[in-house]
Length: 130
Length: 130
DNA sequence: ATTAGTTACTTGCAATATGCAAGTAACTGT
DNA sequence: ACAGTTACTTGCATATTGCAAGTAACTAAT
Image (cartoon, rainbow over all chains, first blue to last red; front, top):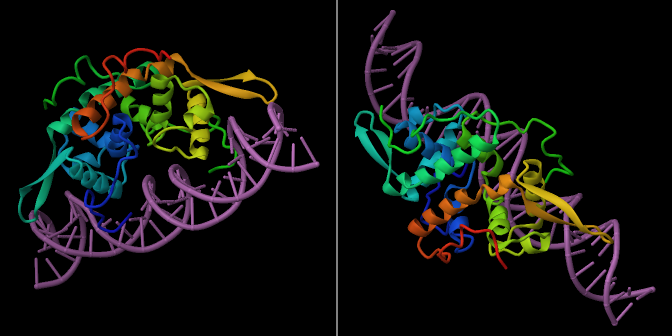
């Protein structure tokens, strides 16, 4: 992992002006969408909640993806306590708008990948309710 | 690149039974969806056509992704001539069904990534017509 | 007051994947 | 015979990932 890498300050440039490839330049890896999934569908906001997924995201990857998502404007980080200062992460509207994409992923997965869990009716559509 | 790697024969296993993560286990990288995009939206079928994208996919990556997509049942490879034997790649129904996902990628990209090209009305919805 | 946790990360380093250039097999055309 | 083309494969440098261990800043127990 690069030491203290700052995202957005340099040329993290797009490969082309195709909207499809441009989105993949932001969320096109095996972990980023899973972080958004947990925030969107399960209402997770804390590092401790996000680290706790069935896919076992490594701690350094989670920290890195939170930084990238913040730099991309998909999430926002805000302190929710002092001593020690701790942050929570929330989806922006930009992040919320990834919902239809995540829903289509789930639809295709349920149709073509045997054994995948089918979410309850309406689960993908509404904001998380505890 | 691994020498002559055979996909599907070993444990290329899923990280969890979540449909979202399972789909990402198949198409969750920066290149795979772009190959499907070109087949779906531009009707490309030949290696020579697929290598010719604005994102400049490396030749070894294209060859690798075609193998993976075939192993995953998203595309099919068939010979279309002898001497020399040459193959064309076609989307299966499983591949065709990635269309809504690719459409959502484009919608989000056009909404949030400045300067991305907006496809003509209906372009994402119909099979390719020359 | 020291010691033992806990949380939210960061760092080091080995393993894996990517990207570029060059090589190759099997042709075609001159 | 020789150059050119196509569809890849191979080698190797670089970048990304994944695991384990380390750390700062606390809290709670002895």
